[in-house]
Length: 457
Image 1: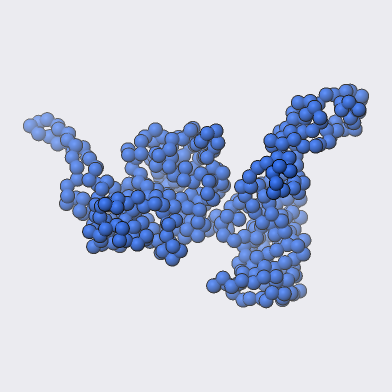
Image 2 (image 1 turned 180 degrees about the vertical axis):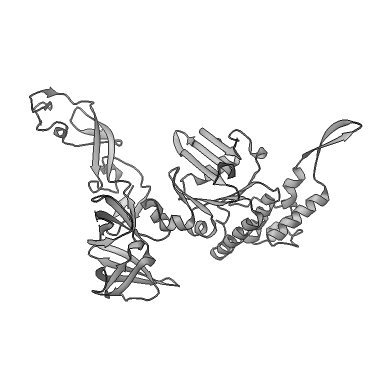
């Protein structure tokens, strides 16, 4: 699309709170009329992004453009943007009509006319007839006609949410921001409101920017999804692209159910995982270590000896429209969704079609840090101090009795405070519960199950 169709652009945006980045180097654009969802776990920065677009937060660095004009420093009330929050923030002392009309009654417009040859500009407000017409139109849009005189406290949660949306759209904003607006509703009402919001967007034709951590909401309503993690965009795409072509293990794990395995490319469009070689459609260099994603609904169960690999069903749960079964090959678990159940203990086979195998480059093959050597010939990195073999720094070197490194040529080197690059294998770290017994402490921020082990960050 042309740049002129972009209604919102964020360029190199950072947002820092007390030295910690909530948003880091965020660049994103949104087209006019799109329904865009910012999707990610709690604390990923999606609500902070929304608040910066609304003007409630100022970026630490970067620019925010509206229709090509810089609005970074423009206050919220001067932006053609309205926000609907998770808590509806309706005025309890006002009825439905007055809640919706509240913003319209405060609005002022400059009216210019000519009198006696002079141009006169006056600030005017909307007439009662104009306000009535606008309120009636949005009440019809949210399917709450004849509710004007109702007390908002007598409405259901879904009706209150529709009133909050009506109050936002009655001001005819160019952009409507929705910050987890369905979070307080029960499951059935939330599903109904998803469809209503999508229909409302189609009628209005304005830009919706929606924040949620609910993957189903994002897939149901969005034209485009922006998946976020730790203040950074992981992937932008249509719901179909995000689901079928995730860019990394985080996206694959976060969007829908996934089987994620560690694999190796062994030939032209051939990948080895679960101790078997499968044909695939993605082209990667031979010997590349990769992540392999297979959706549960794409695994086909067959009789033993008739598929790509044999194994055993170890669990089966009925989920309403399908059975969710766990199939074990060696030590590796594979989740399968099928309308036909195989019983626990059944020996059977599975087939996976080449176009059902999605290959992704591994994000992390090892932990890499910059550290330094101490006087004790230990290494400090990641806020911890660890034993190490400093003779790796010089081939055929050794340590003398005083702890100095002696090179192959006999040179004596004091390594104290020398900066080094440190690499630690993914399988070489032990996680323990008691932080007092560890060499470094931290918080788990992501866990991805990879069939026979967990990848923990």
